[in-house]
Amino acid sequence: MRLLVMYDLPMMTKENKRVYQHFRKFLISDGYDMLQFSIYCRIVNGADGVDKHLKRLQQNLPTKGAVRFMQITERQFQGIKLLVGTKKRKEKDIDSRQLLLF
Image (cartoon, rainbow, N blue to C red):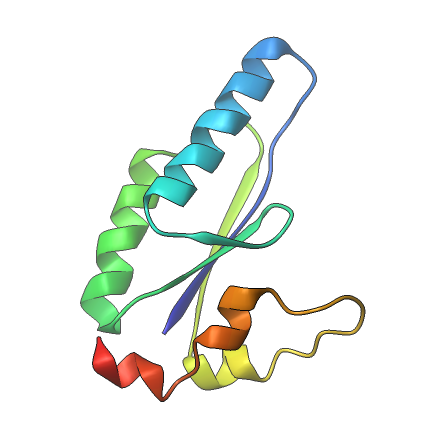
């Protein structure tokens, strides 16, 4: 299963930028990879993993802006069509067959 976190945070003041950087660093330290600007993705194993990471996310939310959380299956993720650009290395390296190893 994959978790997607999509966010749009204000960047008008130094404090806004500091909050933005703190949230972004939290996502990276919690195992998320940047899929696209302001869209981060993480693999989890089952509903317990989803609950655990949703709680962590809720504890680190910024007070302003918009943050969205979405869980999708590996099959749905593999069905995403890239219309412009190239897939990142991590997208190419991991597929649903490899998830059985976790």
